[in-house]
Length: 336
Image (tube, rainbow, N blue to C red; front, side, top):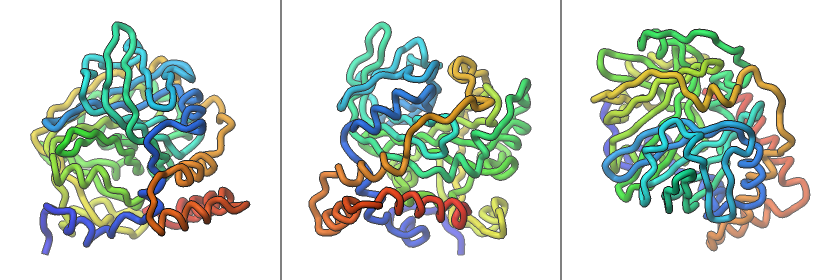
């Protein structure tokens, strides 16, 4: 019997509990690997919100458009599509991609100060995200698209990438990447938008947040286009078999479907995407995501036995290579 997922226990009964390494990969500052990543990134998906709701926007320019130190991230107001969303004290979440690299860097915190030309964020969380969403969406192999569909239904049918923004009951923000082939990323069913949950890092921060505070926002993209759809609404999750079956890919049915009601939708061209020229991809920066992620786990301050054993295992020679092989195996065998 299908049901709406209303508790963390119900959620974990369907998708399982978060594995320990997924918890340990989060650090409370920007280490040198993260700072290097931000210096190389020309673009970010960015969200601002509090316990009453959240909104998502884009930011970008040239590589290194954002600056940072160990505990602070700084974004030029002129390089955000909607800098008015930033207010002191609100939750902040961001996702930094790198050209040609499927893994992304997530940085969360709170807006500490809004200056005339700069937004200063106090960093609370930093961690790497696996590359499945960008692989499924063919994000970096896209060719430039001169004209995106102007009709909302047609745009959603063509979209292949979704950035989902959520907050918890305390106003802490999160921004999660979702990717799928065209026609499978999202479905518009009357006044409700649906999308599916695919295998990922099983942190499920977004879904925990939806249970606690269901107001969400999202940005939908067609890789190759500078046009976006931004929306907000009220989300719920279900294990309804018929709905999940609509998102079946490679003979695999997702475990959850997410619906967003009470939609407020805008379609526009993103100045940040126009400035950034993400497509066609012009070159891959010299960085090893597996090494960055390994260092994050080693830097985590958790003190339990499992945390100590995991950190010790990653300190042996060749640990980064093993993590890289593990990611490659996941990308080949567990995309859906």
